[in-house]
Image (tube, rainbow, N blue to C red; front, side, top):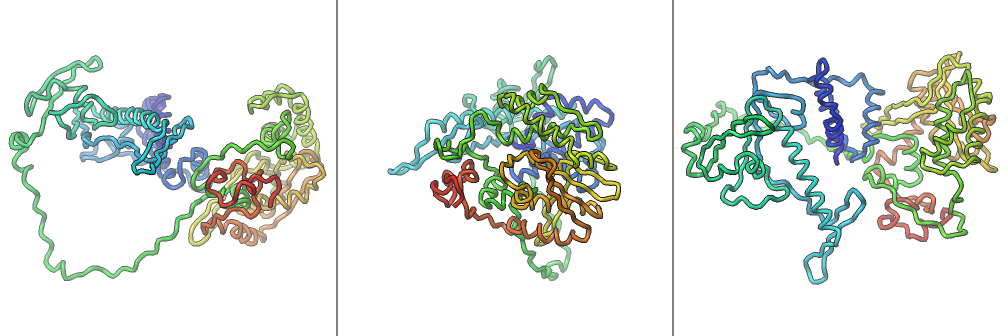
Amino acid sequence: MSLETLIDRAVTGSGYDRAILAMPAGERRMANVRKLMRMAREFEADEGRDLRGFIDFVAERDLIAEREGQAPLEAEALDAVRLMTVHRAKGLEFPVVCVADLGKAGREDDSALRISDDGRVGIRLASIGGGAIDSSQLAGIREQEKLEDEEEEKRIFYVAATRAQEHLVLSGATDLEKLPAEGLLEEPMRWIWRGLALELAGSGSRHEACGLYAGRDVRVRCEVLRPEAVDELLPAVDRQPVTPEPDPPGLDALGAPALAAVPVPDAMAVSRLSYSSLERYRRCGYRFYLERALGLPPTDAPVPAPGSGGEQPADELPGLVRGSVVHLLLERLDFNQPGSPEPSEVADLIESAGHPVRDADVVELIGMFDAFAGSALSRRIAAAERVRTELPFAYTLETGGRSLLVNGVVDVHATEPDGGGLIVDYKSNRLGESDPATLTEGSYSTQRLVYALAALRSGARSVEVAYVFLERPEEPVTASFEASDAPRLERRLLELAEGVAAGRFEPTETPHRRLCGDCPGRPALCSWPPERTLAEAPG
C-alpha cells in the first residue's frame, strides 16, 4: 500500500475527513490533508515506501523552514471547468461532476516475482524446453492482489461519484453485445452498467429509467454511442474537426533559439543522513545502500553454532531493550528533584518491549538510573538555565551543488549560565574492561561531530558534548568546541558524507557475523562468500 493510500485510508476509516469538514474552515482543513497526501506521493517517488522516513521528513520541514503554507483552496463558486484527480477532489463537492475514461480495464501486475504482505513468495521460472512455469504460490498471490486492486478501484470510484451534488456524468467504452460474466479488474463501465442499467443494454441509443438506490429515487439516463447512432447523438458541430488558427506571418523565419544543453546531475541515492546513517555507511556502504536507498528489510540472521561465542545468553536482556528502557526512564527524570523509578514501572517497560521480566534486570536498570541521577553531571544539568530532553535537530550541508540534510535527536540539551551549550548522550553499553574514552573515540566520534555542529549552527558560541556510560556515570567523556571550530567540523563531516553524495556504496573490507548476519544482501547479493560474512571475527 502506498503512503498516499495509507493516509487516505486512515482519514476515511477513522472518520477524520467528516470530522474536519464539519469544523470551521473545514474545506481548508481537508485541502491540507490532501496536500499531505501529495507530499507523501512525492516523497515515495524519491525515497521509496518508508513510513518512518516520511514522518521524519515532515517533522524536519517544521525544523528547517517556516511553517508549511496552507494548501491552496479552489473556490467552489469559480465559474470554470476544473480538471483534477480523484484524490484532489476528496472533500469537495460540485453541482456537476464528470468521471471519464471508465472503459479502461485495470492493469494486473505480471511480474515474475511476487511477494505477498504475509511473506509468501511466488515466482515464475523459465523451463529448459522453453516457456515458463509458475510456482504453487504465484497464482494465489496474484488472485489475492487482484481482489485487493478491485476493491481499491471501486473505493476510488465511490469517492469520485460522490463529489456530485446534482448531476453525475459517467463516460467510458464497453461492449454491450458481449457482457461477460463478472470478473476482476475489468473496465469500470462494465460493473457500473450492471449496477445501474443492465436492462437497458438492448433498448436503443437513448433510454431513461428511475430506480431506488440507497433509499433514494434516482433518474438514470443512458446514451449508447454506436457507429450508426453518431448522427443522432452528436450535434453536427461536434462531428467536425476544429481548424487551428493560422500562424502569424513571418513566424517560420524566426528560427529556434540557441539554448545550451542543461547538464542533468546524478540523483543522490540518499538525501538525508543522521549520525546512525553515517555510522552504518562507514561500516558497510553496500548494506547502507540496500537498506536506505532500496528499502530492503534486514533478514533473519543464522543461528550461531554452539560454543562459537556469537550466541547471546538466553536469559540476558538484549542490548537494544536494555538501552530503550533506560532511555525511557531517563526521559522522565526531573533533574531538580530526582526520584527513583518504581520496580513495577521498569517491569512494565521491559514487558512492553516483548521481553520476559527478571528481577535482576529490574534492579540493574534502576541502579543505572539512580547512579546517573546522583552524579555530578546530573547536578550540573539541574543548574542550567534551560534543559530540553529528546531535542530534535536538522541542518543542511552543501556538497556538489546539492543539499544534504543531516538530522537527529539529542538526549539532553542544556543552556548553561555562561551561555554555552551542554549536550549529553546516554550510553547503556556493557563496558567490562573497556575504557570509556577509548570507546567514545572509536565508536562515537562521528556522532559527537554531528551534535557539536548542530549546536554551533543553532547560534551557540560554544558547546560541550558529554558521553555518559551509565555503568560509570562519574566518568563522562567530554569534548568542547567553539564557534570558530564550525568550519573545520563541517569540512570533516563533508568528508564522511562524501561517499554517500558521490554514490559510492562498496561492501565492507572486514565482513563478519555481527555486521553481516542479518544483511539483506548476504544470502545472494553480496560479493563476499558466506564463510567471510558469517565469520565470528572481522577478517
